[in-house]
Image 1 (tube, rainbow, N blue to C red):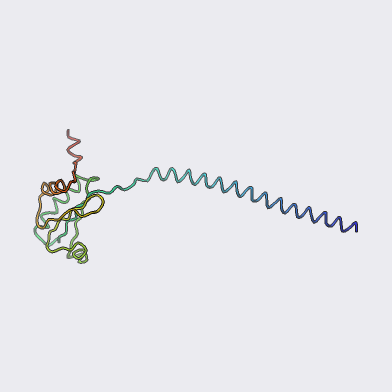
Image 2 (image 1 turned 180 degrees about the vertical axis):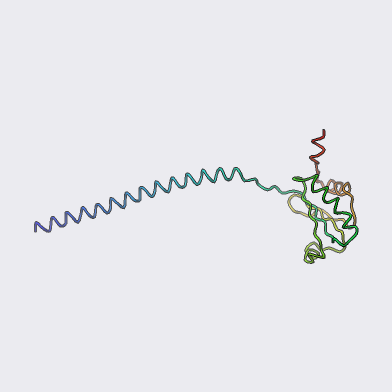
Length: 156
């Protein structure tokens, strides 16, 4: 009988020891989890502050072809607009002869066609044929989109 009590006592110690080890492991894993969450939150907070959110801009899509004379005449105008209004206006040229799906996507009837979009992506209007830079800026203004040229602001 005495041996049975001793065995039960030892079994209780082992059992308690295992329980204690499990509790200790849970405690340390909880502490590690809290530390990892803190470090990852800190790291993500720094990373999030360094990410620049891309803002939506008004957009001009010129649909044409590099083999069309009025389209070729528009190329330097589009390049000027893209450079002068960088960060204010997105300018895109789509060649429908190289990208035939674009003609369907934009429902093009003739080239060059300029499509004017607001910052939310809503189509404001279209123009068919050659356009000067001044006319393009006037069209945006007519649609309620004021394009402020940062180059002019620097000169003043």
